[in-house]
Image (cartoon, rainbow, N blue to C red; front, side):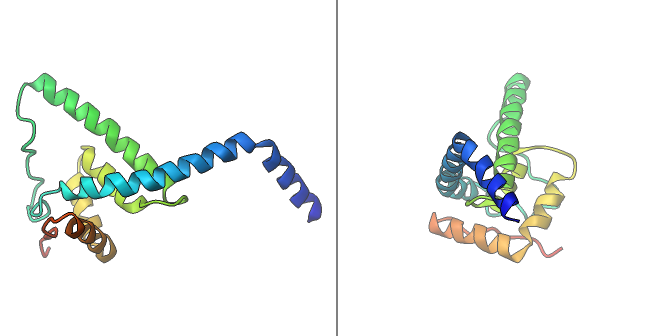
Length: 145
């Protein structure tokens, strides 16, 4: 057993840069999620989850080329948030909330049903509404399906 421990500590000693960058990434993600997630959560309309189908976006109703660019950027950020949220399950940060924000930015069939299923989880809804309250927003309302 001591030989295994020695080989693990030797390997870790050789990976100083990896450990340094991993630690730095963890700290940045922790503080970044504390700064960005409440702002994003506060932008969700309080009645977003009351509809049977996903309500249309009110932000961009212009030229199709602009809509395409906006969708591509939203999808890129959504994938980034999903990836970072998954990483935050193992490092400090708000992993589940970050993943939910990532899902909300991406479009795919059945997305709205999945969002509603996730938001109905008591811990998720409680956490989001706590963040919204801190920013002076009304709590999210959900339908009784």
